[in-house]
Length: 189
Picture 1 (cartoon, rainbow, N blue to C red):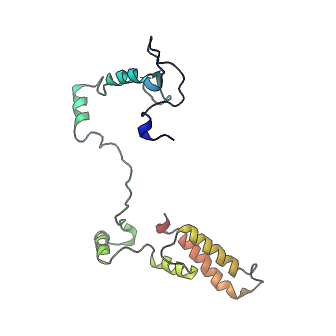
Picture 2: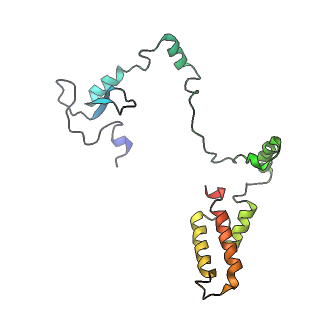
């Protein structure tokens, strides 16, 4: 794939038609809309050469057909903020505590700031840490490794695989419970 510096943005790869401007003999490699896209499809466009697509784009005016009030509103500092935006990830910051864990909202707010005093946040909850210990795994583990370890232990402890020895039933139950808890851990989300 060519880097961005080697190709011009918007160029249609493999275009073989000539420029749609009458009398131009250059290759038409750039899309120029004739009708805007809408709910009925991508819209109608012509293929133009680089010089003619630049002329076409220079004539474009976003404010065509708007009243003076609409233009003023569109140019205001709050233009576009009425639209919903995507939720941003909390990479690099602590996630907010779950509100359901607290009976008083002020405790939830305070808990987020108390977390900074206790050092780095724990990746796993206490029950999840116990489940990791039951599987013989440490804190720096990914879901794939947990799944592999779970499979190994089930094969080791299951009576059908160990010659009918039922002395490992408790360990098998702990292994299955640990997997059920860890596969839903927030650390792997």
